[in-house]
Amino acid sequence: MKEQYIQAIHSILLQHDTQAGDDDFLTAAESILKDGFHWVREFSKQPSEATVVNMIHHLSRAATEQDKVVALMTLAFVLGTTKMPADVATGLFDELLFRFFDNCSSDEKLTGLKAMVANLYQLATEYSPF
Image 1 (cartoon, rainbow, N blue to C red):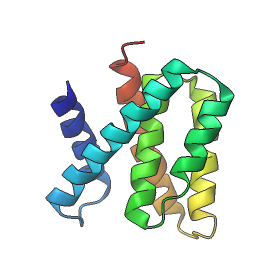
Image 2 (cartoon, rainbow, N blue to C red):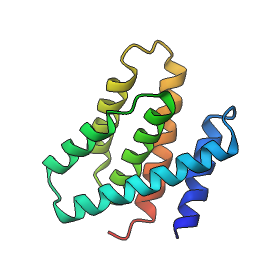
Image 3 (cartoon, rainbow, N blue to C red):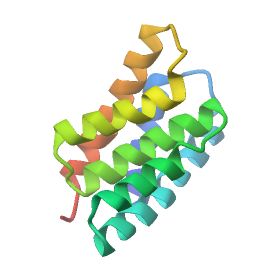
Image 4 (spheres, one colour):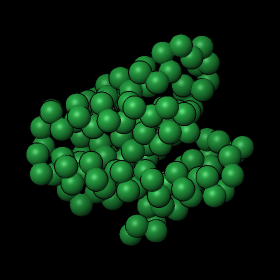
């Protein structure tokens, strides 16, 4: 199942950024899955608002643009896997997007990021064991 997730995440990343190298995408996909499973386990142990806030705080530390995309995708994976309601997930995505890209003037870029996150959220929801 892990390899299938990595390939699916890799495919989603490729759809939205054709300029990065294949190895970069595979590394990002593995990171998203590793961090995502960590936060799913944390949320399973303590399914509370505090866990989500802690996760958002941790993910918002991303410095580079690639790290920010990985953080957004990790959030999508966790929220989809834990079957967070779509309206709540959308609010959390928007919060992290605002933290990362509050000075971004490109609607096209933000729309692309939202579409990428939505694709992974949907995939994670469909294959969630919960």
